[in-house]
Amino acid sequence: MEAQRLRREQLRDGTVLMEVALLVVVGAVLLGVTLQRTSGMGTGLVLSPALVLAIGPVTGILLTNMTTVVSAAFLTLAVRADIDWGRYLRIAPAILVGAVPAALLVHSVESGWLDVIIGVTLLVSLAVTPLLRGRRAEMSPVPAGLLAGALGGFLNTAVGVAAAAMLAYAQVTRWDQRSFAATLQPIFLTMGLISVITKLLVGTAGSGGAPPWPLMVAAIGSVPVGVLLGGVIARRVSSRTARAVAIGVVVLGSAATLLRGLGQVIGM
Image (cartoon, rainbow, N blue to C red; front, top):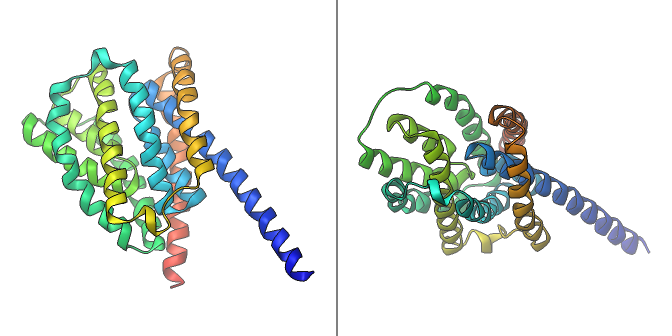
């Protein structure tokens, strides 16, 4: 009787945790895709800390990568007229260079340290981004694109967020905002695909990193809703307001992730 009671409690607790995780996933996807629709980036930035907290660093970043692929595919179709394919081709070839070592890092590092790495990287990215917006330095487009691709591939695979690398590239090459926001979509699509494939090849998903199917269905199914919602909101809410909301979510999630990781590391 006692064993049956414990079993029922475990099932009930597992159901509650899954329901909470589903709410977090759907909310994060809707907010992230809406921000991406209004400003060109945001899906990974919002999803990464939210999913890492909800389902762990390895599974959370893998699901972030998967969702980014779907959201970027939808948005690529929506903004295809403004995409600069020449700039895309300067960045895309180098993505694999950064993605492979990042996949190996994710596969080999303990979850506590991954939480620390993810939390610190996201917080640093948020701190650096305003500085990059005011930067006026110039750099040759080809080496800048290769560097941005490699760094972006590493960051996207390791922590699910490559926005800082792409924004730095846009600043040093004086990239027009409209074309930049549009071209980011096929770039993020490529980064997401390469991140997922490299993680599968090194065995990250097979070592407990595969997201539960209800969460995958919820995340991917929420993307088209987020795209439609983002299209409506983009006409009524400024990108600055949407970005401010997202930054608040990212700061809270990143700080909580960092603290959780530090707690695990100190307790080792």
